[in-house]
Length: 157
Image 1 (cartoon, rainbow, N blue to C red):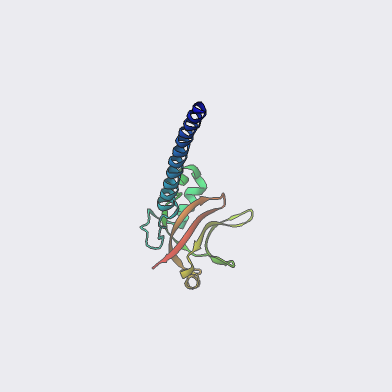
Image 2 (cartoon, rainbow, N blue to C red):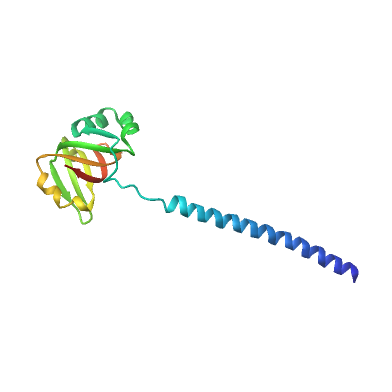
């Protein structure tokens, strides 16, 4: 009987160690999840409208750089805020976006150049600039072998 009581008390002590480890691991996991939410997921978004441009370039020069020196241009411009000045060729509207197009070359599938997706606040006011010189500021995501893509663009007056 005494042996059985000793065995039970030893197994309870061992069980308590596992419960302690489980509680510690759970607490570490909860703290990690909280920190991940606070500093990664809940991070404030960049306001591209107010962001200072990393580069100021003409539409012709930007397109020529990507067309002729794609690797170097990607390293230089991708992920940066760029201010682009050029003649606005046309405006494309979808159900969700308004895209300003600087057509700088004729490709196999149509116009090639720079396509700039506008912020909603600028979607209506872009119409007055069609065929005229305009300066846009936006976030460069790269080159798809026909167009340089800018997102979250605003009109600079």
